[in-house]
Image 1 (cartoon, one colour):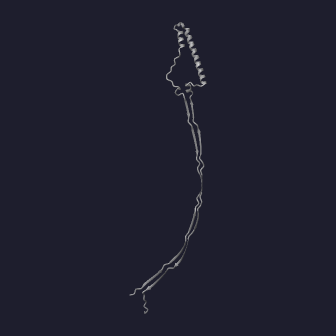
Image 2: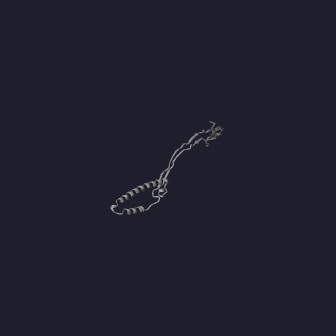
Image 3: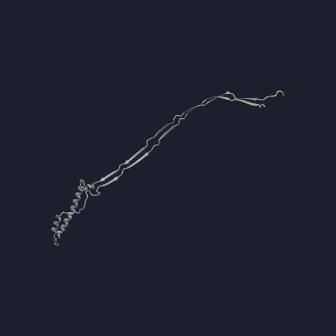
Length: 191
């Protein structure tokens, strides 16, 4: 028995593409930047320290006195010696006036007038402690700072952009086809 068959033959389509690629150009200039930094303003005011040393008393203790001070002391000592001499003479005169009350006023006065006076003295330091007077006023510093902020100016440059789009041209190189054949089919013509 002869079975009919179908024979199918196809031809694929072939497409020919002509592609022109797109082009893109981008140019970006950097931004224009201007920066200015004003200097800070600084003011310094100094009040100098003051040191005062008074060594007048120490110099006097070492007998290094000024002429004015020596004259003043001599005048005071002379005045006090004069007053004490007047008092001593008055006292001795009173004792001589009362010689009748007894005693030995002439001998006592001679002894008193001939002896050196006794001075009380223990340990001494030259110059004496605390004789140098020191006064110190520390220096003062006033600082005033004014900082100035920077001045920044920015100018942004836009990018330059050139774009050419791509082009695609297509054409059929081979069209598709299909061919169908029946094989093994016998047609009885007698009938």
